[in-house]
Length: 470
View 1 (cartoon, rainbow, N blue to C red):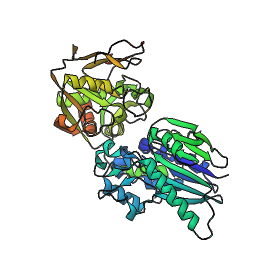
View 2: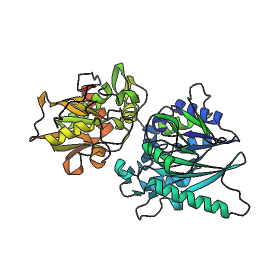
View 3: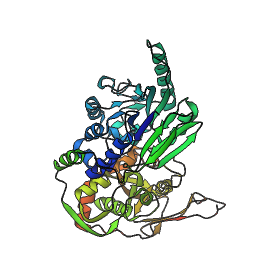
Protein backbone atom coordinates (compact mmCIF):
# COMPACT_ATOMS: atom_id res chain seq x y z
CA UNK A 1 0.00 0.00 0.00
CA UNK A 2 1.42 3.37 -1.06
CA UNK A 3 1.10 5.88 1.78
CA UNK A 4 1.80 9.55 2.42
CA UNK A 5 2.37 11.06 5.85
CA UNK A 6 1.34 14.72 5.84
CA UNK A 7 1.79 17.65 8.23
CA UNK A 8 1.17 21.38 7.83
CA UNK A 9 1.01 24.72 9.69
CA UNK A 10 3.13 23.44 12.57
CA UNK A 11 4.13 27.05 13.38
CA UNK A 12 4.33 27.47 17.18
CA UNK A 13 4.95 23.78 17.89
CA UNK A 14 8.68 24.58 18.06
CA UNK A 15 8.13 26.90 21.02
CA UNK A 16 7.74 23.72 23.10
CA UNK A 17 10.67 21.53 21.97
CA UNK A 18 9.32 18.41 23.71
CA UNK A 19 6.02 18.75 21.85
CA UNK A 20 7.85 19.18 18.53
CA UNK A 21 9.92 16.07 19.27
CA UNK A 22 6.74 14.12 20.05
CA UNK A 23 5.12 15.31 16.82
CA UNK A 24 8.20 14.17 14.92
CA UNK A 25 7.93 10.86 16.76
CA UNK A 26 4.36 10.33 15.53
CA UNK A 27 5.43 11.14 11.97
CA UNK A 28 8.33 8.69 12.24
CA UNK A 29 6.01 5.97 13.60
CA UNK A 30 3.61 6.43 10.68
CA UNK A 31 6.37 6.52 8.08
CA UNK A 32 8.20 3.55 6.65
CA UNK A 33 9.50 2.05 3.38
CA UNK A 34 5.99 2.20 1.85
CA UNK A 35 5.51 5.90 2.72
CA UNK A 36 6.75 9.39 1.88
CA UNK A 37 6.58 12.30 4.34
CA UNK A 38 5.32 15.59 2.88
CA UNK A 39 4.37 19.02 4.24
CA UNK A 40 2.25 21.89 2.96
CA UNK A 41 3.62 25.16 4.28
CA UNK A 42 3.77 27.40 7.34
CA UNK A 43 6.29 24.89 8.62
CA UNK A 44 9.18 27.35 9.08
CA UNK A 45 7.28 30.24 10.70
CA UNK A 46 5.89 31.91 12.74
CA UNK A 47 6.88 31.32 16.36
CA UNK A 48 9.42 32.27 19.01
CA UNK A 49 12.02 29.75 17.92
CA UNK A 50 11.34 30.62 14.30
CA UNK A 51 12.09 34.25 15.07
CA UNK A 52 15.27 33.29 16.87
CA UNK A 53 16.44 30.95 14.09
CA UNK A 54 14.86 32.80 11.11
CA UNK A 55 12.97 29.62 10.31
CA UNK A 56 15.99 27.35 10.15
CA UNK A 57 14.79 25.19 13.04
CA UNK A 58 12.83 23.36 10.34
CA UNK A 59 16.10 21.79 9.19
CA UNK A 60 16.24 19.84 12.46
CA UNK A 61 12.63 18.75 11.96
CA UNK A 62 13.11 17.75 8.33
CA UNK A 63 16.05 15.57 9.33
CA UNK A 64 14.17 13.96 12.24
CA UNK A 65 11.15 13.12 10.06
CA UNK A 66 12.88 12.44 6.73
CA UNK A 67 10.53 14.91 5.05
CA UNK A 68 10.75 14.56 1.29
CA UNK A 69 8.73 17.54 0.01
CA UNK A 70 7.26 20.82 1.25
CA UNK A 71 5.55 23.81 -0.37
CA UNK A 72 5.38 27.48 0.55
CA UNK A 73 2.82 28.86 2.98
CA UNK A 74 2.32 32.58 3.46
CA UNK A 75 4.54 32.53 6.56
CA UNK A 76 7.53 31.03 4.76
CA UNK A 77 8.14 34.61 3.58
CA UNK A 78 8.14 36.17 7.09
CA UNK A 79 11.85 37.00 6.95
CA UNK A 80 11.90 38.09 3.32
CA UNK A 81 12.63 36.37 0.00
CA UNK A 82 16.41 36.25 0.43
CA UNK A 83 16.26 34.56 3.83
CA UNK A 84 13.84 32.03 2.37
CA UNK A 85 16.13 31.36 -0.58
CA UNK A 86 18.99 30.64 1.84
CA UNK A 87 16.77 28.33 3.90
CA UNK A 88 15.61 26.45 0.81
CA UNK A 89 19.15 26.02 -0.48
CA UNK A 90 20.17 24.33 2.78
CA UNK A 91 17.02 22.22 3.24
CA UNK A 92 17.07 18.44 2.96
CA UNK A 93 13.44 18.53 1.78
CA UNK A 94 12.63 19.70 -1.76
CA UNK A 95 10.25 22.66 -2.12
CA UNK A 96 7.60 22.18 -4.79
CA UNK A 97 5.99 25.40 -6.02
CA UNK A 98 4.23 26.13 -9.30
CA UNK A 99 2.72 29.59 -8.77
CA UNK A 100 5.23 31.77 -6.87
CA UNK A 101 7.11 34.36 -8.93
CA UNK A 102 10.15 36.33 -7.79
CA UNK A 103 10.84 40.06 -7.94
CA UNK A 104 11.54 39.80 -11.70
CA UNK A 105 8.49 37.71 -12.47
CA UNK A 106 10.49 34.49 -12.80
CA UNK A 107 9.70 31.24 -10.96
CA UNK A 108 10.80 31.71 -7.36
CA UNK A 109 13.88 29.93 -6.03
CA UNK A 110 14.80 27.85 -9.05
CA UNK A 111 18.55 28.41 -8.45
CA UNK A 112 18.09 27.16 -4.89
CA UNK A 113 16.31 23.97 -5.99
CA UNK A 114 12.61 24.88 -5.96
CA UNK A 115 10.73 22.87 -8.60
CA UNK A 116 7.17 23.19 -9.99
CA UNK A 117 6.61 19.44 -9.77
CA UNK A 118 8.39 16.36 -8.51
CA UNK A 119 8.01 12.60 -8.64
CA UNK A 120 8.94 10.09 -5.97
CA UNK A 121 9.06 6.31 -6.03
CA UNK A 122 7.04 5.03 -3.08
CA UNK A 123 6.71 1.28 -2.49
CA UNK A 124 7.26 0.57 -6.19
CA UNK A 125 4.77 3.19 -7.42
CA UNK A 126 5.48 6.55 -9.06
CA UNK A 127 3.76 9.43 -7.28
CA UNK A 128 3.69 12.89 -8.83
CA UNK A 129 3.40 16.10 -6.81
CA UNK A 130 2.73 19.76 -7.63
CA UNK A 131 2.70 22.60 -5.10
CA UNK A 132 0.68 25.83 -4.92
CA UNK A 133 0.41 28.78 -2.53
CA UNK A 134 -2.44 31.18 -1.70
CA UNK A 135 -2.42 33.85 -4.44
CA UNK A 136 -3.24 36.50 -1.79
CA UNK A 137 0.12 35.93 -0.05
CA UNK A 138 1.59 39.22 -1.27
CA UNK A 139 -1.31 40.90 0.54
CA UNK A 140 -1.25 38.60 3.57
CA UNK A 141 2.47 39.05 4.22
CA UNK A 142 4.20 42.43 3.76
CA UNK A 143 7.55 40.64 3.37
CA UNK A 144 6.21 38.99 0.21
CA UNK A 145 4.94 42.24 -1.32
CA UNK A 146 7.60 42.26 -4.06
CA UNK A 147 6.68 38.76 -5.20
CA UNK A 148 3.65 37.65 -7.21
CA UNK A 149 1.43 34.61 -7.04
CA UNK A 150 -0.33 33.37 -10.16
CA UNK A 151 -3.68 31.62 -10.35
CA UNK A 152 -3.12 28.31 -8.53
CA UNK A 153 -5.50 26.20 -10.62
CA UNK A 154 -3.90 27.31 -13.89
CA UNK A 155 -0.39 26.96 -12.49
CA UNK A 156 -1.12 23.49 -11.10
CA UNK A 157 -2.71 22.35 -14.37
CA UNK A 158 0.33 23.53 -16.35
CA UNK A 159 2.71 21.81 -13.94
CA UNK A 160 0.69 18.59 -14.11
CA UNK A 161 0.76 18.64 -17.91
CA UNK A 162 4.51 19.22 -17.89
CA UNK A 163 5.07 16.46 -15.35
CA UNK A 164 2.94 13.92 -17.20
CA UNK A 165 4.68 14.73 -20.49
CA UNK A 166 8.12 14.42 -18.89
CA UNK A 167 7.28 11.08 -17.32
CA UNK A 168 5.82 9.74 -20.56
CA UNK A 169 8.93 10.78 -22.50
CA UNK A 170 11.41 9.25 -20.05
CA UNK A 171 13.14 6.10 -21.28
CA UNK A 172 11.74 3.01 -19.61
CA UNK A 173 9.42 5.01 -17.38
CA UNK A 174 5.91 3.84 -16.72
CA UNK A 175 2.91 6.11 -16.23
CA UNK A 176 2.28 8.04 -13.05
CA UNK A 177 0.48 5.80 -10.59
CA UNK A 178 -0.81 8.62 -8.38
CA UNK A 179 -0.95 12.42 -8.52
CA UNK A 180 -1.17 14.69 -5.47
CA UNK A 181 -1.35 18.46 -4.96
CA UNK A 182 0.53 19.98 -2.02
CA UNK A 183 -1.62 23.04 -1.33
CA UNK A 184 -1.47 26.06 0.93
CA UNK A 185 -4.73 27.53 -0.35
CA UNK A 186 -7.23 26.77 2.40
CA UNK A 187 -10.72 27.16 0.94
CA UNK A 188 -9.26 27.03 -2.58
CA UNK A 189 -8.64 23.30 -2.25
CA UNK A 190 -12.17 22.60 -3.46
CA UNK A 191 -11.42 24.35 -6.75
CA UNK A 192 -8.33 22.20 -7.21
CA UNK A 193 -10.37 19.06 -6.63
CA UNK A 194 -13.06 20.04 -9.12
CA UNK A 195 -10.75 21.38 -11.83
CA UNK A 196 -7.82 18.94 -11.77
CA UNK A 197 -7.47 15.21 -12.34
CA UNK A 198 -5.65 14.30 -9.13
CA UNK A 199 -6.02 11.69 -6.42
CA UNK A 200 -5.66 13.95 -3.39
CA UNK A 201 -5.20 17.55 -2.31
CA UNK A 202 -3.15 17.77 0.87
CA UNK A 203 -3.88 21.19 2.31
CA UNK A 204 -3.12 23.73 5.00
CA UNK A 205 -3.52 27.47 5.63
CA UNK A 206 -6.90 27.25 7.38
CA UNK A 207 -6.33 26.17 10.98
CA UNK A 208 -9.04 23.54 11.20
CA UNK A 209 -9.00 19.85 10.42
CA UNK A 210 -10.51 18.43 7.26
CA UNK A 211 -10.89 14.93 5.86
CA UNK A 212 -13.49 14.53 3.14
CA UNK A 213 -14.05 13.79 -0.54
CA UNK A 214 -14.85 16.43 -3.16
CA UNK A 215 -15.27 15.46 -6.83
CA UNK A 216 -13.80 12.01 -6.15
CA UNK A 217 -10.68 13.65 -4.72
CA UNK A 218 -9.52 13.19 -1.14
CA UNK A 219 -9.09 16.54 0.65
CA UNK A 220 -7.08 16.52 3.88
CA UNK A 221 -6.04 19.28 6.27
CA UNK A 222 -4.35 18.38 9.59
CA UNK A 223 -5.01 21.60 11.54
CA UNK A 224 -2.49 23.84 13.29
CA UNK A 225 0.53 23.44 15.59
CA UNK A 226 0.86 19.72 14.95
CA UNK A 227 -2.49 18.81 16.47
CA UNK A 228 -2.74 15.93 13.98
CA UNK A 229 -0.72 14.12 11.34
CA UNK A 230 -2.53 12.83 8.25
CA UNK A 231 -1.93 9.34 6.85
CA UNK A 232 -3.15 8.94 3.27
CA UNK A 233 -3.45 5.55 1.54
CA UNK A 234 -3.31 5.85 -2.25
CA UNK A 235 -4.29 2.30 -3.19
CA UNK A 236 -8.01 2.77 -3.94
CA UNK A 237 -9.83 4.87 -6.55
CA UNK A 238 -10.51 7.48 -3.87
CA UNK A 239 -7.68 7.49 -1.32
CA UNK A 240 -8.41 6.81 2.32
CA UNK A 241 -7.09 9.12 5.03
CA UNK A 242 -6.79 9.08 8.81
CA UNK A 243 -5.86 11.93 11.15
CA UNK A 244 -3.57 10.83 14.00
CA UNK A 245 -2.89 12.89 17.13
CA UNK A 246 0.70 13.01 18.42
CA UNK A 247 -0.18 12.30 22.06
CA UNK A 248 1.48 9.11 23.23
CA UNK A 249 4.17 9.07 20.59
CA UNK A 250 7.79 8.57 21.62
CA UNK A 251 9.80 11.78 20.99
CA UNK A 252 12.50 11.54 18.34
CA UNK A 253 15.82 11.22 20.20
CA UNK A 254 17.95 14.35 20.08
CA UNK A 255 15.39 16.66 18.47
CA UNK A 256 14.19 18.23 21.71
CA UNK A 257 17.78 19.02 22.73
CA UNK A 258 18.63 20.47 19.31
CA UNK A 259 15.63 22.79 19.38
CA UNK A 260 16.27 23.76 23.02
CA UNK A 261 19.86 24.67 22.12
CA UNK A 262 18.60 27.00 19.42
CA UNK A 263 16.15 28.61 21.86
CA UNK A 264 18.84 29.09 24.50
CA UNK A 265 20.69 31.40 22.14
CA UNK A 266 18.08 34.11 22.83
CA UNK A 267 17.54 35.88 26.16
CA UNK A 268 13.74 35.71 26.35
CA UNK A 269 13.16 34.39 29.87
CA UNK A 270 12.33 37.72 31.56
CA UNK A 271 9.08 37.43 33.55
CA UNK A 272 6.88 40.42 32.68
CA UNK A 273 3.91 39.51 34.92
CA UNK A 274 2.27 36.65 36.80
CA UNK A 275 -1.15 35.40 35.69
CA UNK A 276 -3.31 33.66 38.29
CA UNK A 277 -6.23 32.62 36.08
CA UNK A 278 -4.96 30.95 32.87
CA UNK A 279 -5.69 32.91 29.69
CA UNK A 280 -6.73 30.55 26.92
CA UNK A 281 -5.71 31.12 23.30
CA UNK A 282 -7.00 28.08 21.45
CA UNK A 283 -8.54 28.58 18.02
CA UNK A 284 -12.10 28.16 19.28
CA UNK A 285 -11.41 30.93 21.82
CA UNK A 286 -9.78 33.56 19.62
CA UNK A 287 -12.27 33.01 16.78
CA UNK A 288 -15.31 32.63 19.03
CA UNK A 289 -16.01 36.28 19.87
CA UNK A 290 -14.81 38.33 22.82
CA UNK A 291 -12.05 36.62 24.77
CA UNK A 292 -9.56 37.57 27.45
CA UNK A 293 -6.47 37.20 25.31
CA UNK A 294 -8.01 39.34 22.56
CA UNK A 295 -8.92 42.02 25.07
CA UNK A 296 -5.38 42.00 26.46
CA UNK A 297 -3.83 42.57 23.03
CA UNK A 298 -6.36 45.20 21.94
CA UNK A 299 -5.88 47.06 25.26
CA UNK A 300 -2.10 47.04 24.83
CA UNK A 301 -2.36 48.37 21.29
CA UNK A 302 -4.68 51.20 22.37
CA UNK A 303 -2.51 51.98 25.39
CA UNK A 304 0.72 52.49 23.46
CA UNK A 305 -0.89 55.08 21.17
CA UNK A 306 -3.51 56.46 23.59
CA UNK A 307 -5.91 55.75 20.74
CA UNK A 308 -9.69 55.95 20.68
CA UNK A 309 -9.92 52.26 19.78
CA UNK A 310 -7.62 49.25 19.91
CA UNK A 311 -8.17 46.54 17.28
CA UNK A 312 -6.51 43.13 17.06
CA UNK A 313 -7.24 40.61 14.32
CA UNK A 314 -7.98 37.16 15.71
CA UNK A 315 -5.81 35.49 13.07
CA UNK A 316 -2.79 37.36 14.39
CA UNK A 317 -3.13 35.71 17.81
CA UNK A 318 -1.23 32.45 17.52
CA UNK A 319 -2.65 29.40 19.19
CA UNK A 320 -0.77 27.59 21.92
CA UNK A 321 -0.67 26.82 25.61
CA UNK A 322 -2.57 29.21 27.92
CA UNK A 323 -0.76 32.15 29.48
CA UNK A 324 -0.47 31.07 33.10
CA UNK A 325 1.81 31.65 36.09
CA UNK A 326 5.04 33.40 35.17
CA UNK A 327 4.52 35.02 31.77
CA UNK A 328 7.78 35.65 29.97
CA UNK A 329 8.71 37.74 27.00
CA UNK A 330 8.99 34.47 25.06
CA UNK A 331 5.34 33.75 25.87
CA UNK A 332 4.30 37.09 24.39
CA UNK A 333 6.39 36.53 21.28
CA UNK A 334 4.68 33.17 20.95
CA UNK A 335 1.33 34.97 21.04
CA UNK A 336 2.26 37.52 18.33
CA UNK A 337 5.58 36.46 16.74
CA UNK A 338 5.73 39.10 14.02
CA UNK A 339 8.39 41.77 13.49
CA UNK A 340 5.80 44.44 12.74
CA UNK A 341 4.97 47.63 14.63
CA UNK A 342 1.70 48.67 16.18
CA UNK A 343 0.46 51.43 13.88
CA UNK A 344 -2.03 54.24 14.42
CA UNK A 345 -4.74 54.82 11.85
CA UNK A 346 -7.18 57.70 11.48
CA UNK A 347 -10.60 56.77 10.11
CA UNK A 348 -14.02 58.33 9.83
CA UNK A 349 -16.86 57.01 11.95
CA UNK A 350 -18.42 55.53 8.83
CA UNK A 351 -15.18 53.69 8.07
CA UNK A 352 -14.89 52.49 11.67
CA UNK A 353 -18.42 51.10 11.42
CA UNK A 354 -17.33 49.15 8.32
CA UNK A 355 -14.24 47.88 10.15
CA UNK A 356 -16.40 46.60 12.98
CA UNK A 357 -18.64 44.86 10.47
CA UNK A 358 -15.58 43.17 8.96
CA UNK A 359 -14.79 41.54 12.30
CA UNK A 360 -17.55 39.08 11.42
CA UNK A 361 -16.12 38.66 7.90
CA UNK A 362 -19.53 38.24 6.20
CA UNK A 363 -17.98 39.14 2.84
CA UNK A 364 -14.42 37.86 3.35
CA UNK A 365 -13.36 34.36 2.31
CA UNK A 366 -11.03 33.62 5.19
CA UNK A 367 -11.26 30.73 7.60
CA UNK A 368 -14.44 28.97 8.64
CA UNK A 369 -17.86 30.54 8.11
CA UNK A 370 -18.56 31.01 11.83
CA UNK A 371 -15.19 32.48 12.80
CA UNK A 372 -15.05 35.87 14.50
CA UNK A 373 -12.09 37.90 13.27
CA UNK A 374 -11.49 40.83 15.62
CA UNK A 375 -11.06 42.05 19.18
CA UNK A 376 -11.52 45.62 20.40
CA UNK A 377 -10.62 47.98 23.22
CA UNK A 378 -12.78 50.93 24.35
CA UNK A 379 -15.55 49.83 22.00
CA UNK A 380 -18.66 47.68 21.97
CA UNK A 381 -20.18 45.86 19.00
CA UNK A 382 -23.45 43.95 18.92
CA UNK A 383 -23.68 41.75 15.82
CA UNK A 384 -26.73 40.00 14.37
CA UNK A 385 -25.26 36.85 12.83
CA UNK A 386 -28.43 35.90 10.97
CA UNK A 387 -29.06 39.28 9.38
CA UNK A 388 -25.31 40.02 9.07
CA UNK A 389 -25.61 43.55 10.40
CA UNK A 390 -24.46 45.62 13.34
CA UNK A 391 -27.17 46.33 15.91
CA UNK A 392 -25.00 48.55 18.11
CA UNK A 393 -21.54 50.13 17.78
CA UNK A 394 -20.07 52.45 20.37
CA UNK A 395 -16.71 53.98 21.26
CA UNK A 396 -16.15 55.05 24.83
CA UNK A 397 -19.80 54.30 25.51
CA UNK A 398 -21.05 56.71 22.84
CA UNK A 399 -22.59 55.78 19.46
CA UNK A 400 -20.20 56.15 16.54
CA UNK A 401 -20.61 59.47 14.73
CA UNK A 402 -20.19 58.80 10.98
CA UNK A 403 -18.75 62.29 10.41
CA UNK A 404 -16.20 62.29 13.25
CA UNK A 405 -12.66 60.92 13.00
CA UNK A 406 -11.35 58.20 15.31
CA UNK A 407 -7.85 56.90 15.95
CA UNK A 408 -7.42 53.14 15.85
CA UNK A 409 -4.33 51.23 17.01
CA UNK A 410 -3.74 48.15 14.84
CA UNK A 411 -0.99 45.86 13.63
CA UNK A 412 0.81 47.12 10.53
CA UNK A 413 -0.36 43.99 8.71
CA UNK A 414 -3.98 45.18 8.72
CA UNK A 415 -3.02 48.32 6.79
CA UNK A 416 -1.10 46.26 4.25
CA UNK A 417 -3.53 43.40 3.68
CA UNK A 418 -6.88 43.62 1.93
CA UNK A 419 -7.79 40.12 3.08
CA UNK A 420 -9.33 40.55 6.54
CA UNK A 421 -10.17 44.23 7.09
CA UNK A 422 -10.28 45.70 3.58
CA UNK A 423 -11.55 49.08 4.80
CA UNK A 424 -8.20 49.76 6.49
CA UNK A 425 -5.38 50.85 4.19
CA UNK A 426 -2.00 52.59 4.24
CA UNK A 427 -3.71 55.92 3.53
CA UNK A 428 -5.12 55.79 7.08
CA UNK A 429 -1.69 55.47 8.73
CA UNK A 430 -0.59 58.44 10.85
CA UNK A 431 1.95 57.00 13.33
CA UNK A 432 3.65 53.86 14.57
CA UNK A 433 4.98 52.52 17.87
CA UNK A 434 7.18 49.55 18.74
CA UNK A 435 7.11 45.95 17.59
CA UNK A 436 3.90 44.27 18.67
CA UNK A 437 5.35 41.79 21.18
CA UNK A 438 7.52 44.55 22.67
CA UNK A 439 4.38 46.63 23.17
CA UNK A 440 2.70 43.68 24.90
CA UNK A 441 5.72 43.30 27.19
CA UNK A 442 5.81 47.03 28.05
CA UNK A 443 2.09 47.01 28.78
CA UNK A 444 2.40 43.92 30.96
CA UNK A 445 5.21 45.47 33.00
CA UNK A 446 3.25 48.70 33.59
CA UNK A 447 -0.38 47.55 33.71
CA UNK A 448 -0.16 43.82 34.32
CA UNK A 449 -2.00 41.02 32.51
CA UNK A 450 -5.46 40.63 33.99
CA UNK A 451 -8.04 40.93 31.17
CA UNK A 452 -11.74 40.33 31.81
CA UNK A 453 -14.77 39.65 29.65
CA UNK A 454 -16.65 42.98 29.60
CA UNK A 455 -19.33 42.66 26.92
CA UNK A 456 -17.22 44.32 24.25
CA UNK A 457 -18.52 41.93 21.58
CA UNK A 458 -21.98 40.41 21.61
CA UNK A 459 -23.04 38.04 18.84
CA UNK A 460 -26.78 37.51 18.50
CA UNK A 461 -28.51 34.92 16.32
CA UNK A 462 -31.83 36.54 15.63
CA UNK A 463 -34.07 36.37 12.59
CA UNK A 464 -33.06 38.76 9.83
CA UNK A 465 -34.58 42.19 10.16
CA UNK A 466 -36.06 44.18 7.34
CA UNK A 467 -33.51 46.97 7.19
CA UNK A 468 -29.79 47.37 7.73
CA UNK A 469 -28.56 50.21 9.91
CA UNK A 470 -25.36 50.53 7.86
